[in-house]
Amino acid sequence: MPESRATVSTEHAVRCVTRLCRHWSHKFQVSVDETRGEIFFDPARCILTVIEGGLQVLIEAPDEATLDQLEPVVANHMQRMVADETLQISWQR
Image 1 (cartoon, rainbow, N blue to C red):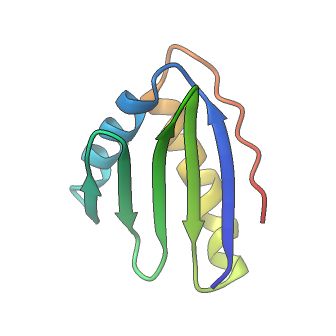
Image 2: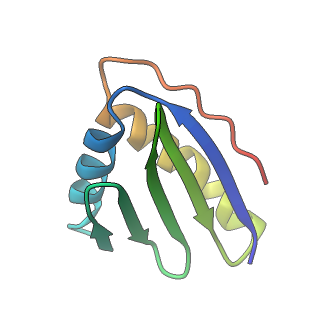
């Protein structure tokens, strides 16, 4: 299964994970705790893990085209959740 990863520096990692999972829980199945969130886009999923200084983001998808679609969507939504800072998100496949 193809995957894309990004390490994102942010002072608001916990808030971003919590808000993002709450936002998407109205449309998708999510799992969230203090240090990790998982969003099931079916058949893709996004895992957000709080690390020192930011977030580790992993998107797993059935194909490259789905990754192409999800990367900007996840990045845009993450930026909206931490509106007071500009996130630098560089995806690595």
